[in-house]
Amino acid sequence: MTHPAPLEPATDGPSESIDQDQLTHARKALLALSTDVARQLAEDHGVCVRPLALRRIDLTTGKVDVVPVPCGSTREDQCRPCADKARRLRMVQCREGWHLEHEPVPTPAAPSEAQKDLLAARVDLHAALHRRPTGRRRGGVRRDPGGRRGTGRRDPRRRYPRPAGPARSPPPR
Image (cartoon, rainbow, N blue to C red; front, side):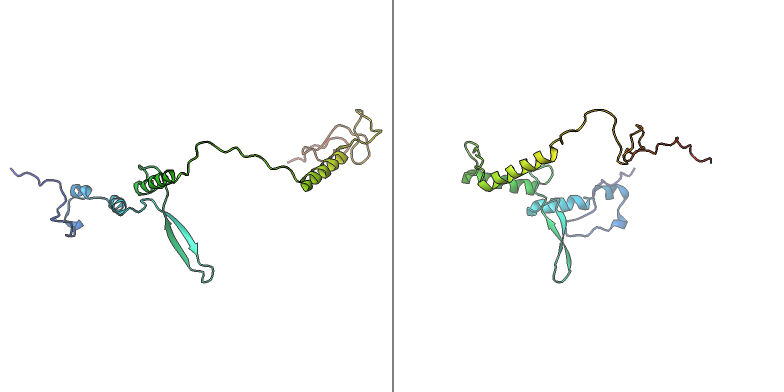
């Protein structure tokens, strides 16, 4: 009775290359995925695990480069190197006294004479625009722009009054 070989990748050391054709499907499943290897390598070197790819265009030559920019996450479950960098930065800021004991209360600046004059002119324009002319009747029948007394009917978009004639039926199909 033969026992199957243990399900481990057939490698003698990290320097030996693996022949994918010689491995069974079960042994291939046990190999580390390339994304896991890249993530572990990035964390070991202290660089961002999820960099953002930004395009940079040189305006003189027109050459386009893709530049990786760190994600800047503050959560360790997303990107451990960026979170560690942000934590160290916060520690330095607290040590240097970037935090305040109490929040400052900003006081607004006093308005200048030019601002007062501008606001007074705007108030005068607003009053002149909305002043009601004298002698205007309130209520009664509205007149349309053509001078006719309105029939109360308007077009569906309510832009212009409808003509005073009978309603037209749609053309036959």
